[in-house]
Image (tube, rainbow over all chains, first blue to last red; front, side):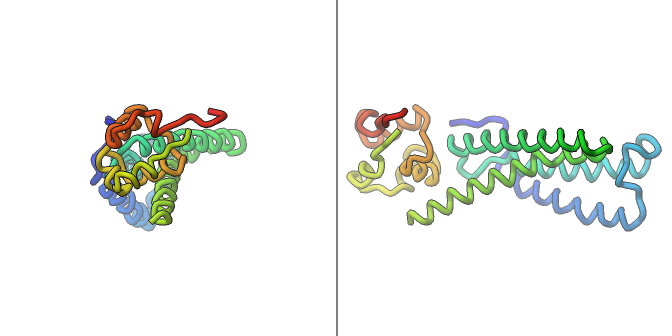
Length: 142
Length: 66
């Protein structure tokens, strides 16, 4: 079965690279006192903090995006089903968190930031976990 | 849905990996189908029937409650 609109297999490694690369960059900037925590409420567009926020947020979300939607080595119909199932769960979790935080937290900037990575990260974790479980039952069979 | 792929494999003397390669899926998928955890698509079921050279109903059969 052909699944279109997926990145090639090597994109997974590129994606993890981007996610890992974004950690030291944002730590350095925090140490230098850049105001990266609240870029949306500080002084306007395209200031240092805002540009920096764009870069790191892009780096991280692009990385997660590539990891989440890279092809498996053998992309067959069962993988496709697990993918869809995990995506559904990711959307559920995302909206539950979103609704709860909209009701109880008065800080829309951070809620949006959360929304940026929660669905992708949950999707990746759930998808990989199911595949690990499949492989485990495979090695039990021998 | 039940299936007797395991039996058919034993008759033909091929491994899960061989069958997976013949029908173009991963070994994990063959294993899940054999242990009734995954229901294959019609295309995949027909491909497997062709490998075993048998009609579909001899390999896959409905269970009660299906």
